[in-house]
Length: 135
Length: 488
Image 1 (cartoon, rainbow over the protein chains, first blue to last red):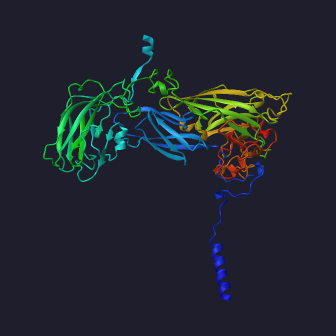
Image 2 (image 1 turned 180 degrees about the horizontal axis):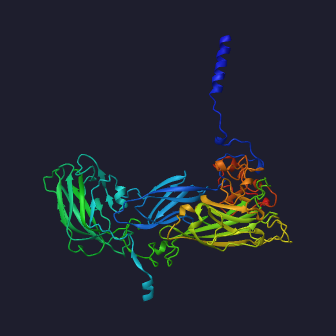
Image 3 (image 1 turned 180 degrees about the vertical axis):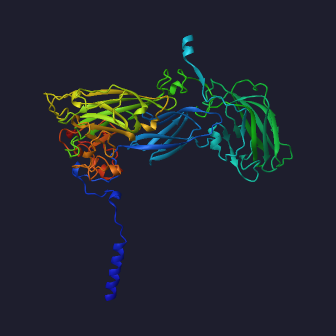
């Protein structure tokens, strides 16, 4: 019996000491008690209150046989909202930096007749001009 | 008509290639790359099998069991043929079969063709027949460019078709070289590099140019992409207010106009003052973090009233600042005039007289010759709008974690309910990280006087408690997201 008590005690001490203290700065209060008004809201230090996301679209240039220049457009899927437009060489590597409303999860990239729909699931996303081979 | 013709300066897209041959050696190992340059393939893949001809990759056809030229083929981009010989290496994968051959066909450009490719009727001009009995040795093929198309200055494609009967053997091909000038535009459906209209000759074709007759301007880069955004302030900082966020409500849109070199030429900014549920005469200004005043040549359209707590440099930016700061309205009560005299809330009490919105349209001109500005330097992420409280220049209220200006009274930071800490770039937040201002990417209704913001937007609390990961549409005009009884 004494043995069992000793082992139980050791187990409790090991379990307690293996817990890591959560730093305040890392605290994301997803399970916080629901606030009743604005003053009761408690959010993490890194919450920025913005309804937009700043996106960096890394464009990988394509070595066209002759230099091709056209307008690089980032828009909503229906192309009614344009988030970015610039005059670019097809061979140019560059970063398109633009602000996107947070609810927008897909964008359309258009370069003349070349068009792709991209998912927005991170701050940094990539684009290249290559399309699947059409037989 | 002549004048129109003169005005419409015609330029060539794609800028003419100086290359005098088309070549295909397959060493990319990826047909998508060649397709990107407007080559096309029909039942012909790339292969690095042992029967490849040269290098690491060659073309490999499907089984050659068909005498049709449309079964297995490679098609060039549009090009302008010159005189000389087409050369190519080829071999068969095995010696079985009755016959094997390669047919060369040229196709003219036909602007009236129904097909989107604008290919005219093809003319077969050469057939290479593998000698029988068939073997597997590499053949060097030389085919003269037909005199009918050589040096014609017209756009053509050449189709190289692999045909055969009997057996199931395939063919390999490699090191194709065709004399001529590449003339396709991958960004225009691979059609020939065409004459396009660029009236101001700035390098941006008129169909893409928002200012087709102004060489100094090319693109509008508007934020938000449609409509307006809303900024909403509490003005009792560093003390907590009632969180109705209506002490100043202003909608805005920023059009960052760029030129063909993608440099910012000007910002055309619109600020629509909608409400001032405050008791003090506040002012409103903004900056872009890190944007130096030396980038700016002029500022116009802002509304500065007397008495005026600001002084300005010659270019219209506020004096004494490290970054360029732009005062929009020096006294909001001069554009949203409290009814009944004196000061007091404007457009926050539904039973009071409604004051028309006031729109301030500013133009900020940028240096475009030296010390130029990229679009990435004037993004929303760097947009830093703020309230100047009660005509006291040093009392500023910014969005959470936005840096105060050089003219702020830094003694106020970190006092009362404010938990700013300049050393860690923490500004304008309470100890629970609550802000004194909110920036929403759409124009949204604001709260009636003294009603808590969360009573108008039903999912706001869930959005904030999730650290912005859920309910990102909390501000949209969708069913059950708003309580319109509490919104002005």
